[in-house]
Image (cartoon, rainbow, N blue to C red; front, side, top):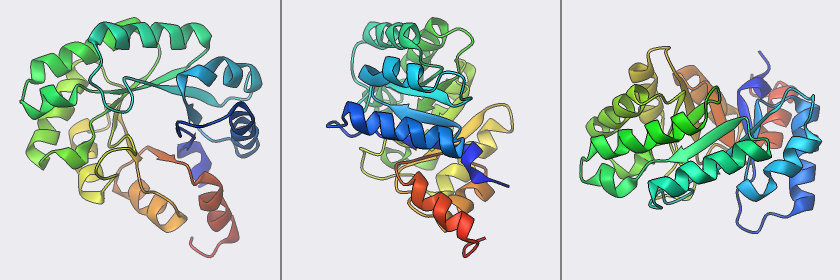
Length: 220
């Protein structure tokens, strides 16, 4: 199976440029990646360039720290959709999660989901910050709030995806939502491990390397 349909071709560096985003979109259309995942400021550019390609346009909300006002996350979401985003990757309020304030976490996710009708909301849990039992509670909370996908990491936190956390999220999702593994996935053997562990999406800035290795047959 071609892994491209599971990959979010990602460029979220703070100094990303228009030309880099154009190149990213060209590559995504060529390989037929599931989505590009890009900064909000470039959504309109990507929407224009990828029109009719079948590639989704994902952007980030409350990224990467998650501690902006919930109303700001809702506003960011609405603006992103107006500009052409077709998927939203949002960061939960990590401080609330640290305090086990699951109600606040759920309320924020529900508000973003409400602001994005018919658009998948991928909820970033930053799993490296929390013990497995807390991650399980967070995952259950955001699923109840309407999350379409559970995502491990921003790639800016203390750690990225792990097989343990992906398996845990897949168990909680139980086929009712997707699981996105992100952070530190740089080659096809690693990507393959996460897909086998239950990930339905892979977020990576190394998509071309992964595809080259897969196409070579060396790591199949």
